[in-house]
Structures are given as C-alpha cells and as structure tokens.
Image (cartoon, rainbow, N blue to C red; front, top):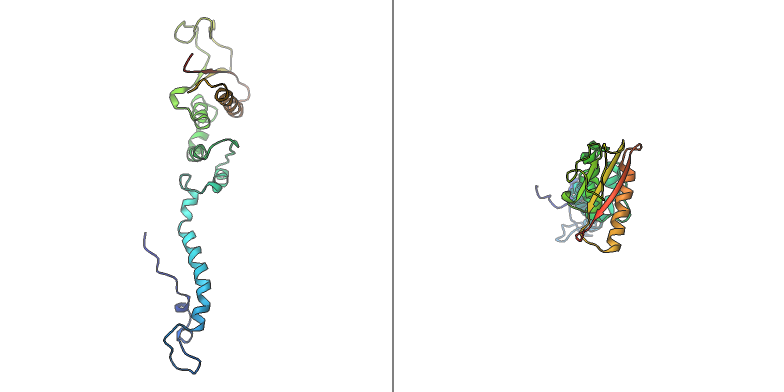
Length: 199
C-alpha cells in the first residue's frame, strides 16, 4: 500500500493565498496566518483520512473492532446470544454463508453447535434415528436401544463435554438446547445426551 503524502491545505489554495507575507507587505520567513489557521482543519482531516484508509478492517470479522461485531453480524442476518464470546461471534460471522447453505441438515446443526458450544467437531454428533436396531453399532442395551428403527422425524444430539462440573454441564445443556430449538426443522423432535470424561 502506497504511503499517503501528508495533507497540506495551503497548497490546495490559489497561488496568491499560498504566499507568506508580513504585515508590511514583504515576504516573511515564517508561515502566514492562513497556514496557521488551516492547521487545525488539517489535523482533523488527516485523522479522518487515516480512519478511511483502515475502513476495510471494519468489514473483516477477524479485524473488526469489538463494538462493530453486532452490526457486522446484522449484514448476514445473524443474532447473537448475549453470552457468546467475541471469538465465537467472529467465527460465526466468518462461517455464516456456509452455515446458511446447510441449515436444516444434520451437518449444519453439528456445525452451528460447534460454533456456539466451542466443542471440537469430534465431540458433536447428530444422528437421525432411522436405521434398524444394531446392538453395539447404533444402540446400546439400557441406553438407546430401539427396535425397528427410530420414530419418524426424530434425531439424537450427543455432545461430549470436556468437564464433569455441574455448572459447566448446565450451561452447555442450556446453550445446546437453545441452538437446537432455533435451528431444527419445526416438525422434528430430538433428545440431547451429554457425556463427560467419566462416562
């Protein structure tokens, strides 16, 4: 990027105004009163030019100032949960178009849960329960055994929590439930399972 030459308002005026003259009409060595007067405006305009030079950063989710994230999210029709950290908001904005393309799909729900919960992809799993009963493959005795397949339009969300702390699990369940309710197709039902390192 080329370096901008410092702004000099006096040079932009017609030649007679650029001359530096003393009160008796002779050439003066110092700046004229007009040059001194214009310096105040020059400082303001130089600062504005600097902001305009950096305006592209405002539209980049990674560089945008914190106070612009809500506004930037509005450009892609996002509304953020109040408890969503800035890093997650930035990721959400960055991935918005991809997430919209996959909205209403199993993979789309997994990705949006990853963004909101901060869990890695391996710890977020959505299964549509349409397959037949397979012990040890799709079902476990006493946990999720289903005969003759699952109910229609029913899916299971399984999240592997990084900790067994009750407060963390409660918050994870609350966030995941809110996201699923907002993102799932209206006619579907689901169950949410949280597993911890001890289970």
